[in-house]
Image 1 (tube, helix red, strand yellow):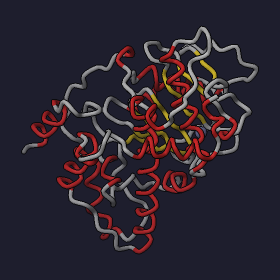
Image 2 (image 1 turned 90 degrees about the horizontal axis):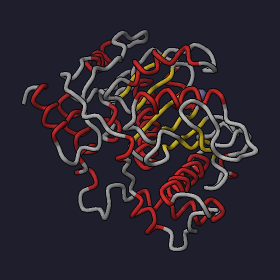
Image 3 (image 1 turned 60 degrees about the vertical axis):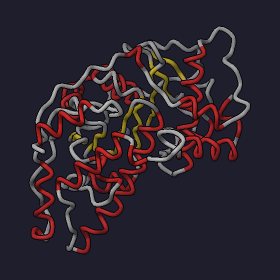
Image 4 (image 1 turned 120 degrees about the vertical axis):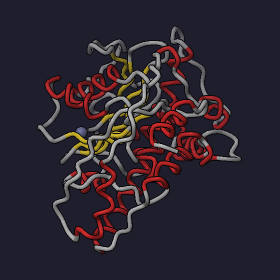
Length: 326
Ligand SMILES: [Zn+2]
């Protein structure tokens, strides 16, 4: 199958979670040795044939809420006056903050995870000043794309968080959930001039799905916006921010979270393998096929739902502290 036909096949797959297209901006030059063992990996910079991405609309937000709700028997109803869809989004996002805390990816009160409020351009973000294990469904802050706080919250919103996330939500309406952390394994890779090299099956999800953005200081205004938008492109769901951290995104929190975990795991293996000087690249055709197994759903063949680990993770959150859902 030619690259173009393969891309079209992926793009037309009814189960494909995100449409494919665009080009990678992976660097092709390596500043470290041994070059021989890594030479094959430089082929990662070759772009897949460009295809047209089907534009996702804000109103078509899809979440795996059915399985999510099944995970917990006594989820509280939406507070008076709040739309049920927003309340479900708040529950999903609060659980995600608790999971990021559980996995040790937090920077105390910094960094940010956002989820679009279904059917709107607004998104939910953490109250700036609370630890992730203090975040609940009701204390998340709803803001508009233009930066107006909708929620009657005593907490401010992290300016860098608003700037980065509003830029990406505006550019990619299909990426409803965006997770940004300063997780140190990702930061280590970001401090090299190496690209992400898929060296595990989970890592193949990032083949031609990751963009790179150079460090310009703390993102406190919109001046970096155009470069962030270029880096995310039309097909990427992950950004490695040089000397900074990691962004993964997806159509819901489950996708964004499992991608964060998969990226970190692959990066741990990649850095360890690189240190031996004998890393073996995965052939491109294998990476493309394996990526489609994840994007098309066959990676979870036989499971009750698309991400069977998601309700399992929610049960863990509930067991640790049921206050997340208040
Ligand atoms: Zn950051």
